[in-house]
Image (cartoon, rainbow, N blue to C red; front, side, top):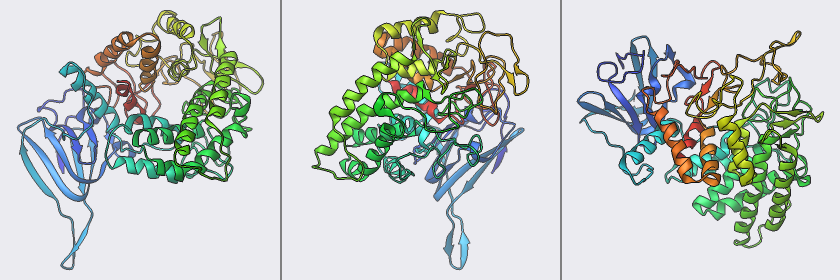
Length: 523
């Protein structure tokens, strides 16, 4: 189905596009701003709706459409000044023919989402409306299961508090997700390692996956009260925890990466979501969720104990064991990663004992949000982020991108395999071997920003600086979201930002960053 569609600019009026949003019975939502400024949009970046009973397209004119079908799918193909809406349904065999049945209903114009959709309820109506739209636009553009283990914790935080069939889908996903016999939770589904670089040549396993699996299962059980799920998962959960305790040496305090390729050295292979940074050996980012998984496992064992003794091959440990170890982990984490002079947590200690610090805001935000920092440290961290200059010479950690702080405050310089460092800056390069760096601010992992980090910022502010401070920051984020691009769509965004999508970019706000839906969930 072809139609006129102005794919340029930011205007979403009747003059430029026929619809302003799409939504379905499967709790999927697509704002038209997401479909602007794509020279050609096709393939997996479409985030097609699938398996629906109906899809509604709310018009910019005088009518809405609702399309019905069995197993209804909708994908968008955008090019130049037109759009093709590709509708498909499950074929049926009728009277010797294959048929594809659609029902198109033209409805009077009405702005109304289904009443059972999740909603935030705040004192002011406008605040509620904006929080809900922000959530729908960032979280519900994606299907309920976002991806492999790196997203488990974020998926749980974003989707488990809503009722619906997606809860059963998430439950199955975590029950069936591959775990090696030794207890390692695969990074990328059937593949043990991250797809970048070539995981058939390098050991690209991430060693925070076990913690994220435990956290997701704990949150599921806590939200749903499903003790049978925990009983079915008990062997896998205990095996995943034992892997952290023994193979990763967590019983000694911090987890240590168990790979010859993941060493923490420059030109090494990454260990977490921030995949062109060679975190490894003692990784401050991975150790945050390791710490969090201990209290989660303590509560899992408490929930299991109410069901009687649940026998497994994997060792069962007591809640007190996990809580005592968590206290030790917190103490050692602060001894190893806290930089007293700079007033922040560093990123990594490599296998040679070298400390790597580029002012990583995302590590400090998560360390605070998960409770590794105390109030004194939190205030020093915020003083650094809010008042000290970045590599631009200005204190622009928050003002550069507004929707989230810069990922790091010190430039990670460009380098060449033969020539070495290419820039006259004090710090040495620290990159994955396949990434040679950019100008500061041109890459979301070096001076750029990824929206999801604001969730941890808001949680940390609430915890240490108070709800009024967090609310003020939320209003700053909303002010950026209110701009015509709604923090989504193809390049450039409204303030000139180049989003990382098919190609590398400075910011991550929508596709392919489903974790952006975390941000309104701080409420």
